[in-house]
Image (tube, rainbow, N blue to C red):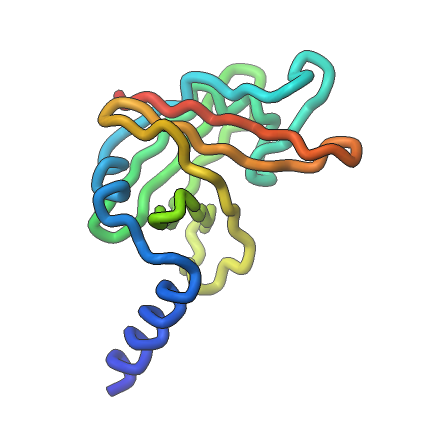
Length: 149
């Protein structure tokens, strides 16, 4: 009964936030790398991505998405940047919202901070995630371009 109640509450929560896009999620399955991180004035302004590292440090990072349970991993190992590796939990909705939790080994339900990004230009070999960040009082789009490995 507890499992049924929990699953019912999860389904109600998902329905209220936009429905899961199963076709999109299956397309993420596999190993990816961020080939480029771009944003306006990137030569002057530094942006910290996902409270982990400078946005440019994510170029070359490795990401694994497992679509049947919405889990995966991310690993940063670029020279001159802090090394970082963590499990992740993610979803993609029909309205183009991509949610990401970097769990650092904790259970996802205990991680209270996550990120809402916009999914753009998804193909079988690439996609973009767009984060809107406030830089000096102005909205700036940070675009992460993923390529399938």
